[in-house]
Length: 340
Ligand SMILES: [Zn+2]
Image (cartoon, rainbow, N blue to C red; front, side, top):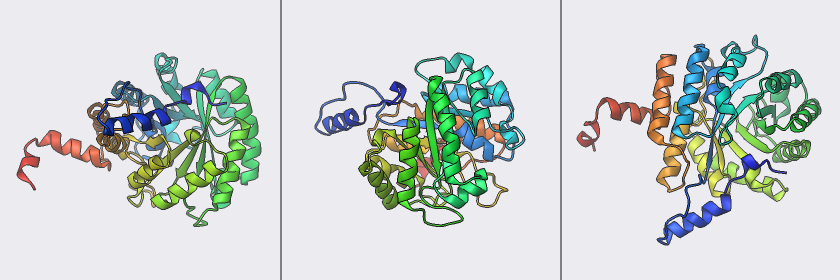
């Protein structure tokens, strides 16, 4: 059963969009796409600078004020694995007033049973699990086979559902594996169906190293839906390593996907780590969709301001295109009129 929090109006959106093209105004302001913000977790875990907990909390509050309704705020992995997120407990405790709100979903990434216990202890209601679509990436990243991951996740997801959690299941390297190259779509289908049958509410297909292209996105989504995965339970998590994230998102939208992951200002991807790369920038996603008349529920200026705040805290320029436009237009209002 789909968790009610994850329902959204994919069909309704399309009808409203068509009505708009024919001259009738949309009848409500329900967001037509859902932007799932990953900057506090996926973004910051890949930065060389460790951002203090109070700044992470301030970032989350700015994102909420901009209208973001899904935010992955931290990860309950062993602090020694990811020192950038060692303050998970403090961050969560400081956000208690937000994550009990019914209109917001604050998520934490959890690696195993122990992580789940920590999330439950903190009263978090939304958790995300992860594994890879490719065997080699799964072994290198998680030190187990995909089958072993599924067995472990059976317990984690089952326990999470019993305690009333919403579960997102990340499947990494769906669009290419840095070790194996092409990833078999049949494997993605089998693992997605397994994860749904274990109780996952949503499958987030990850283009972990930005190897995907729009044609492939269309094919993967179509094959998954043909195999019985409801399109409203698919999310796309794109990285912009090769500059294709936005095109991949648009391709996903055109075949019915309505949940897209983004990281404000494209944060993530340490400049000192080889092969590291940023997520799709959520301000780029919001700008794209709003320009198309597809309502996101997010105020772009406030979102961009959250990106500026984060860039200042990290002390480095961030790669998001809208972010850079926003920085340029706020520092020199005349620039546009002077250039072609
Ligand atoms: Zn990512």
